[in-house]
Image (cartoon, rainbow, N blue to C red; front, side, top):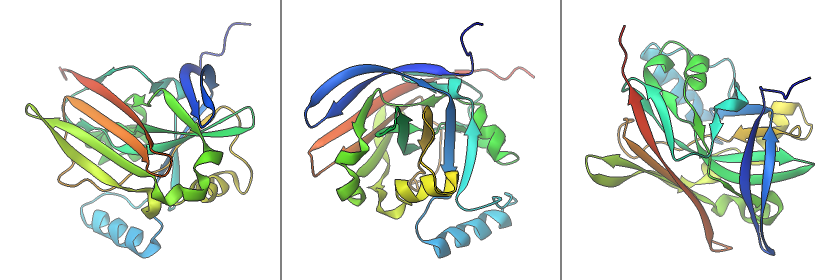
Length: 234
């Protein structure tokens, strides 16, 4: 039998307090967790606001969208169709050989498609992830102090697009338990953990940069990618 083409193999630098090493991880499942805010009243308020704009209420909060694993990439460029896509920074959780790792990625999404099919909008764009991971065990005790940031290129200027700590989002143990009904995240599964509100309007840009900062251990993971836009011809 041939190789499983539904899996993707990515190379990561596993960075811990004791050193670093390169590893190739085979990922078979990708999960995009949405509506992951800890304040359930605020989440519900936002759901109702979007309903007034004609955007359908999610089936649950949080909700777990499935995306093809081959959509994951550590490359410095992605290709999209049309001018209505944009990135958003998120913590990523990756389970491999019984160990949970933490990194950062961008749930790049087609915003036009999102208005009529959120699940489809998640599938149509590649999902960039930074090629560096930390052991979850090293950050769990100070999890809420981790910070997410993203920057978008507007004109010729890099502008801060999102910023905040993960304290406003459901913690990993809670998210995983809700997705698996109490079990551990299955080996080979990568989960995006939800995003922060943008500091201004949601808008496309030709370049997107994102980072995860650990102020306690004084380290950060960063990644940047260019967005190459393909034309819509009909």
